[in-house]
Image 1: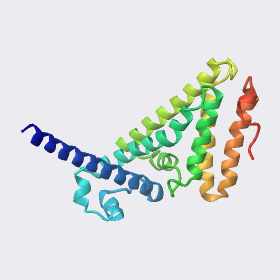
Image 2: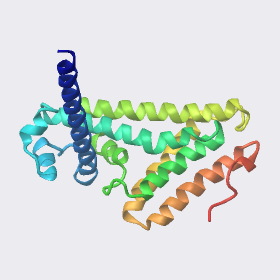
Image 3: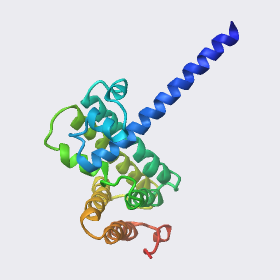
Image 4: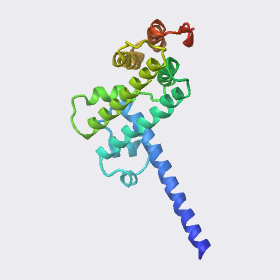
Length: 221
C-alpha cells in the first residue's frame, strides 16, 4: 500500500512537472508574439495556432484572453530577471553593478532573444492609453524596475563611488532612457550603432561622476 501510494504521487508529480513545462513554453511563445504583433491582440486562439495545439488545451491554463496577457507580462518579467538582473547582481555593488546591469540589458537586445524587440518598451507604449488590469500590471513591473535602478544608484552613492549630492532619480531615469532608446533605435536604424551609443552614453556619465573611474572600462572597442 505504501509503495502504491508513492507510485501514484510520482505519477502525479510528473504530470504537474510536464504541465508546468508546457505552460512555460507557451508563455515564452506568447512573449515573442507580443513583441511581434502586440500584447493587446494576443489571444488563446492566436497562441494555439502558433504552437499547433488546441485552444481547449490552453484554456486549462488561462480562462480568458486577459488572464493570458497578464501571465505573459509576468513571464516577461521572469525572463528579464534571469537574463539581465541576475547577471548584474554577480558584479560588485556600486558603479560596477550599475554598469553590469546596463551592459546585460544591451546584450539581451543584441542577442535578438525576442525577434520583435523589447517586450517592455513595446507594451508600455502600446498600453499607455489603455486603462485596465494589463496596463496596471505593466505599470507595476515598470515601477519595480525603476525602484531597482534607483537602489543600485543609491548603493553606489553610499559606497562613495558616486557623489553624495547626486540626483539618484535623475541618473536612474537616464540609465533606463538609454536602454529604451537602444531598444527602439536598433529596430529602425543600425543596431550596432544604437547599442554602442547606449553603452558609451552611460559609461561617459558614470566615469565623469565616479570617485574612482578605474572601476569602469575606459572605453568600448
